[in-house]
Image (cartoon, rainbow, N blue to C red; front, side, top):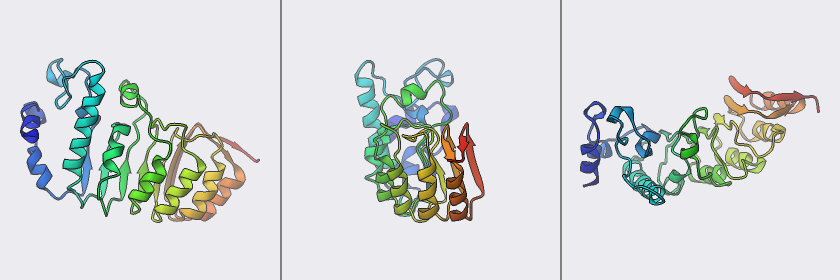
Length: 239
């Protein structure tokens, strides 16, 4: 019934495989966009609501959106144990309760952050991510080789301990995006811990942080496979 209801509300231009067919397919890559949960008017739907959005007004809008998200995650994603890449960019923390209950034994890349802040940013992240999100994800998905949580709204920010715990749990970690999520501006302690706990790291993205020269040198020596760094508006100092 749910699959049929969703299919009927997709405009012809957006129709692909029917939802019940997708659920029966063994996928390795899956991306779910925030448009599915938006209650903003869509140009594609003639000024109406974007398909899949709960037609609920007022304080119940968030409750309906959370329920739809949890049901969809458990049904559509939970059956995909072959997933290696899961992109939930822009969906916000409403996906976390269902996500940590999923059995994804070969998941490698997980994207939970945001594109650079846009008009939909405030609505998508009116509620912050839990402060222990990184350690929780590391414990649930130790096979992760890449995590993108850049520009997400994390309650209290991401601590040094959280970064170290993630790297310890995910021994094969190679790609990490922590843009604008850290608690403290001095990222040097995390550089040092990554050099020890994530020697296979090949890319790192951060934004607006301070880096000490000695920590950068330690990081470069410890992560010998490093191929790309994306340091945006970061400061550097000798001490």
